[in-house]
Image 1 (cartoon, rainbow, N blue to C red):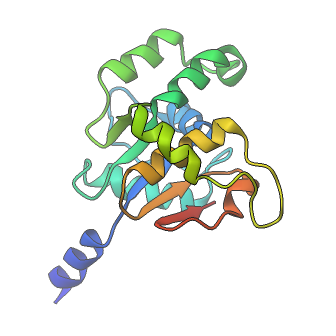
Image 2 (image 1 turned 180 degrees about the horizontal axis):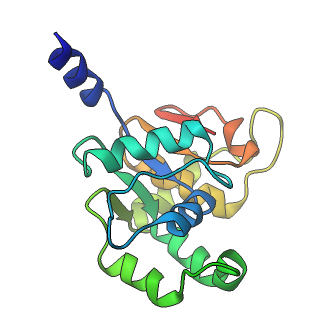
Length: 170
């Protein structure tokens, strides 16, 4: 009976889209010697976000992937010194991570399909707050998956969105 319950919980897991801030926190914790090390609650990573990401890490992608938009890479490089100031994480570490990405990570391209899905992203959330173009790209990436996804973010504006097939987790 335990196997059936565990199997069903694995099958119910969704891919997990993460925004740039959560990606930066993941990079700060990433251990190149042990790429399947679980992410810890810290900084912008809440218990709920860590739980979602760790489901993907634990099963090395067979239980869903952690997905970033290629635009998140651009954002990280653009603010690299600001994000990683005071850490041991270097630009070489970053490029090594991208070139030798773990089995549980997918990097989604920014292509015509994602651009077209930008039209599906609301300009404002339920509270009337504007959604930035940066965040709209991450959301369009999630919509482009064409399947239910979890979207992990610490951005309160995004949590107040209601978009089919996207469950926002903070």
